[in-house]
Every structure is written in C-alpha cells, then in structure tokens.
Image (spheres, helix red, strand yellow):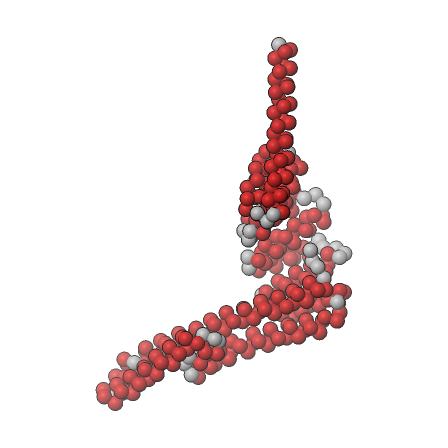
Length: 284
C-alpha cells in the first residue's frame, strides 16, 4: 500500500513539474512573439497560459492579452480586458493606469460619450503628476468632439507646466481649426445654393460638380423649350420636380463633402497638436 502511495505521489510531483515547465515555456514564447510584434499569435499562447497557469502567470497574461487586443485594434475586447484588470488591480496607481487604457480604447473607437464618463471617473482619483495626464486627455476628448475652447484649456494646463513657450502655437492651431469649421461648411452650402455644382467644386468633388452643371443646364434648356412649345405651366409640372431633385441632392452632397473635409482638417490639426504636446510632455 505504501509503495503504491509513493508511486502515485511521485507521478503527481513529476506531472506538476512538467505542467509548470510547460506553462513557463509557453509564457516565455508568448512574450517573444509579442516583442516581435506577432500580436495575434502571441494572444493565442497567452490565452493558453490563462487556462493552465497559476495566479501570477494569469495576471501577467491578462495584462499582455489586453495589450494584444489594443495593438490589433480590437478596442471592444481591449476595453473589456482592461476593465477586468481595473477590477483585479490592488494598487491605486495600477488601477489608474488601466483606467487610462480604457479611456484610450473609447477614444479610438469614437465612443466619446462613454469616454467623457470615464474621464470623470479618472478625475475623481488623479493626484500629483497624474493631473497633467488627466488634462492632456481632457484636451484630446474635447478636441475630437469639436469643443475647442475646452480642448484649449486642457492642453494649456499641460503646456503651462512643461513648455509655456508653446502656448502661442497651441492658440494658433485651435483658432485655425475653429475658424475653418465655422466658415467652410457654410460657404460650401451657400455656393451650392447660388450655382448648382459650385459647392461640390469648392469641396473638391469636381466630377459630380461638372455633372451637376451639365445636368441642370440640360434641364434648364428642356424647361425653356417645353415652355415655349407647350406652355410654362406644363414645363413646370414636368421639368421643375426633376430640377429640384438634383438641385437639392447637390446641396446636400456639398454639405456632406464639407463635413468630410472638416474632419480631415481636424485630424491634421490634431496631429500637429499631439506633436506639439509630445515635444513638451510624454503621457506614457
């Protein structure tokens, strides 16, 4: 009986050793894949460690797996993973770091309302140097939602401490995009209203603009010919609805193109602001 127990105990210890070694090797291999930027493959092995590893390995793998989701732009999965880490983290500083990662996921997936809630939660816990990080993300959130006055306040708070000489450049950039957005869409629609196709041409959509010029010109000619041959009442009944249809669609298209160009310009200015901030302060 004792001999059997000894054999069973030996088998148990050996199997545990093999499993532990296997988990350790798997984790190291997953780290290597991650460092080589083979994120998808590394995620597969980190998930294996989550199943078979001990508490320490599971925690480290959870952190890596969240980063895998983030780097592969699976932001919903990354948010859920960071949410778990916030719940499990013991130290407040670690919790706060994962909260910022959650915020990044929401910003990158353009869930700005949820990002605003997240930022309010962060605000209640930030202390010391983390205040600058909070104001940086405050500026980012409000810039991306076109609340430029609030964005300026957030970015300025950082630059006042880190690089006061750059505040004037920041002010110029914020003024530039704010002025552009106020005038560009209005001009595009006004031009489209005055001369069909002009607004589309103004927004860079030149082929549809030419089509509008030609089509509405043809409809105008048809209206005149029909009016002289059959009467202008008949011409109005038959031609004007078509003319209005293409006129209004051109007006709407000019507005849509204006919004598209405004968003492009916003991100160009945003990148310039981020570059300015990076030269002054690293949030990572």
